[in-house]
Length: 409
Ligand SMILES: [Zn+2]
Image (tube, rainbow, N blue to C red; front, side, top):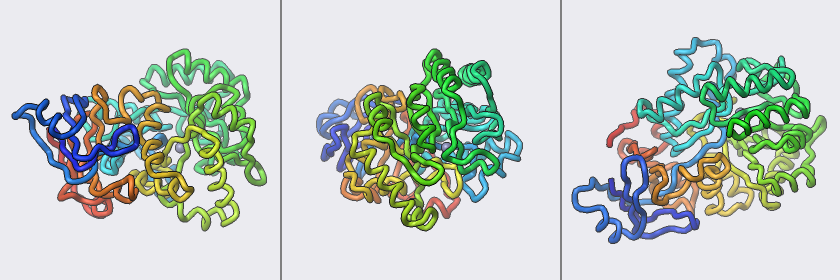
């Protein structure tokens, strides 16, 4: 397939005007000026002329396909595995329709996200590439204990890592602090594991060649996770019992050791001042600004599945960074190339370059000028599979309708 477009976003953060991308199976064969690529393609290649922008497919660094994104996501876990699995497949399709071609699933129950990942990879399901963690490690009664990963002591921690590795994990998830989703667990600012347990977990994961994603709200938990050598810090809100405490020495280590800060931003971020109070929200916003200005490797996620966070939310979350003053080219880079690098799939996706998987997002308009253009998805190409949206449908339309994603080629 040959796609020609008004604009193609290259990894320099600028547009190639009047360009073309040539696909070969699941990979990008060539990208460049239209005339050159058309010549290379030959006359028999199917063509799509897109009046708009082609950019790399978006990456959501933090989702939970197992949760429903409603007011009580934990309640839904009562369903049988097959019911849950079916819903997870629908949510994967939703992510894809929103332009997400790679999603990291940071915790499910019973290895169901591994099944979704395998079905997408085999072409049985239209969805993003899923990098699944499986069962997150948590102490007995700890954050997300209901997902089945309660462990205590270094041996049990290593054992859980081994079970996840054997089940097909792409990343190991550990809950280093409490979290809001677990009403009967520790508070978000409280630490959950000893240094020895965290070190054992990181050691076992790295020995298996897998990165570690640490859920860390507490300032203490962030410092402990950094000390143990984790690869990505999830949420990273620097909470204490009484407020927040962004520690410059810990932030320095995060930057020096290139630990990615995987911020989870709800598409309803504009509501945060009402939810947390003006003052608290202002501090939280300012901490993010400080981390970005200091040079932290911030990547983007939504925590899709948790309370009031659906699977179509990434385009609505990205303007949060623009609100903080981050330029659009940097935001799009964070949501594509930067995320891919941090998640260890930078050689596979995140850029439009020959040899990489054909993960592309086709939108109307100009997202470098206005991020709202990301909501005008016309087609998504995931690993070379072309998913066109009905009648240049907008995401808002799709939300309300029961239109299905057409798949071809
Ligand atoms: Zn999460």
